[in-house]
Amino acid sequence: MTKPPHGPINQNAFIVTDVEAGIDYWTRTMRVGPFFKFPKIIFAEADYRGRRHTPDFEAAIAYSGELMIELIKPNGPSIFKEFLDAGRKGVQHFAVFADDLAVAAAAIEARGGKRVQGGSFADGSAIAYFDMGGPEPSILEVACLKSGPLALFGAIRAAGAAWDGTSRTVSF
Image 1 (cartoon, rainbow, N blue to C red):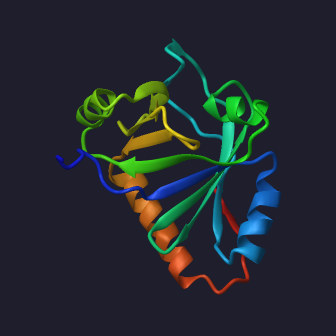
Image 2: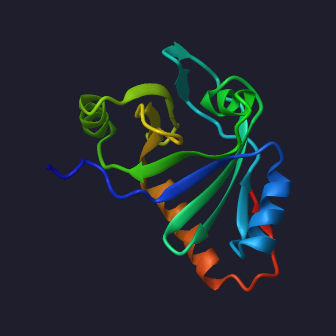
């Protein structure tokens, strides 16, 4: 078996109907925090099911050790909203980092993955989501991030490592 052109799974993404309720659960019950809230994710360009699209969702991120926990509340059409509309909630996708999105996408598609959503950002970072056709959850996100977002995730990871359990969130 050849090594994939991306890193290990580093994120579990949960679809929620209420970000604040999700943060309450994760900070109080699971003891993960603090969460960094992103009320609007701004893409330079994006697609959904093969068509240009402007995603509308909010997110909150925290780390438990090396594992990123992402809470996503969809506010418009997306694979996230499809998940909720199907009556599901909880883990919707896993994520990995890659140095080259095109190379990682080609390898994933060769294994049967089908791109269902993605986008790029003003700094040149890009993400893509692939339906891997397996048991739920079967979506794999591949993120090819530039130094700014990687540094931000490093700061969020450091905040989680130093978290004393008192603060729930940090807003941007």
